[in-house]
Structure formats: structure tokens, C-alpha cells
Length: 220
View (tube, rainbow, N blue to C red):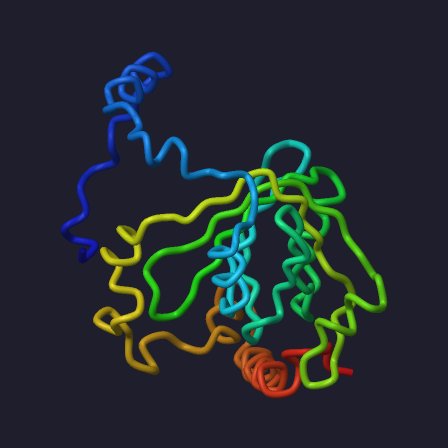
């Protein structure tokens, strides 16, 4: 939708109006009500084993939320049993939003995606951090082990239907944008934080090196 076609800012419901709206929805279907089986079964375990990416949601003690993607080759997410899954903490920008949130609030939620498949797997539970050498070594990619792992104790687990991914045509490429639609991330962030042209070029070069050489361990 072009900016010129945007409507005015919307009117918002008060608490009573919002509660009435929610109450007006049809009752949950029996299948939807029962699909949270609270454990990772054989179907979800296989899905997670094949998945190369999950979205991780956490919040701090005040409830301020963060969602971050975690991507790895298939097989990197480790399912120990019906109630335990682990994911690696790979090198990033060192904001550590997820890890800092977990220090304050162990609640966590995950959505696993599988390219070409429109259904997803949703898990929720509590998380703790681990530096167990055997676990980290098992998570190594190209010989590089993560600094730590996030180990989730699962209390909620279910398969999610395909409607959102079908509507977005995520895997069809219909809405893919050609390369060059946006400037580099180094340049866009440079614009946002007021870097000079030279600093933007330096940031672009550093990002290129990080993408090429720093996927599995920090650039030294």
C-alpha cells in the first residue's frame, strides 16, 4: 500500500471494548483446543530435526519483549526427549537481548520453520543456559562450537496450521524483492545512527567480512 493510500490513524478500543470483541469470536474448535499436547512427539521431533531456522521470543522482567531468528544447518537443533530441546547461541552483534532477558525471565517461546512446508512447530517453556562441553561440541558447525546453548524445558508443543504462510506465499517467491531494493544493512543502519559516508563504507566492508567469515565464530 503506497503511503498516499494509508488511512488515518485508527480509533482504538478501550479495555471493555477489547474484552467484548474477544468474547465475540466463535468458540475454539475441539481440534485446536486439544492440539497442544505439551510434549515433542515423533512428528514434531522430525520437523525440528529438519528445520534450519527458528524464531525465539523472550521478555525481560518488566515484560518488554524481543523476537530473534536463529538459523543453523538442519540437525543443529537438539531434541533430547519429549520435554527438552536445545539451540546454539551463535556469534552475533553482542546485544545479547535473548540471553539478558533469560537472566531476568526464563520464559521462552519458539517457532520452527521448514522451507517448502507451510505448517510450523510451536514450543513454549522455560530456558536455562548451558556450557556443557559435550553439548557444545555436538552443536559445532565447520568445526566451530557455540559459546553456549539455550536449553528449553518444554511445557507447550503443537503443530500450527499453514494459513499465515499460505497468505504470505513465503516459499513461492511471489513477493520476493530483487537484490538492490534496499541499500546494504551497513548503510541503512549508518543512516539511522548518523554515520559519515566514510564510516558507512567501513561498516559495509565489516559486515561483508562478518557474513563471509563470522557465521560460526566471532571475527578476531
